[in-house]
Image 1: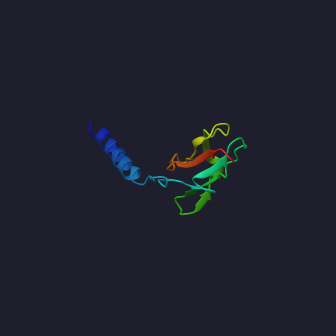
Image 2: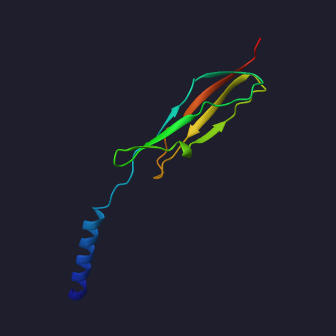
Length: 112
């Protein structure tokens, strides 16, 4: 029994030591910058073209990386009906950290 106990004890000690060396990983949330006006006023019956947004991530090394290509955009803008609409931007980095979503308000108005 003693012959089995010592190797198990060594194995357990090694596990405890090496598990403490594990990296925590990327904990930095990416961030989103809305381009153009917010709120934005748009004329009724003119096709809506959103000015867009950019997204960036800070890596573990402290570098800033452009992740705009990962942006997800959800819009309910209806230029056929005057009213208040929104465009929401979301993004997550490669580590799965989600940015705080950003929202643009679009006011579709009647023109004289």
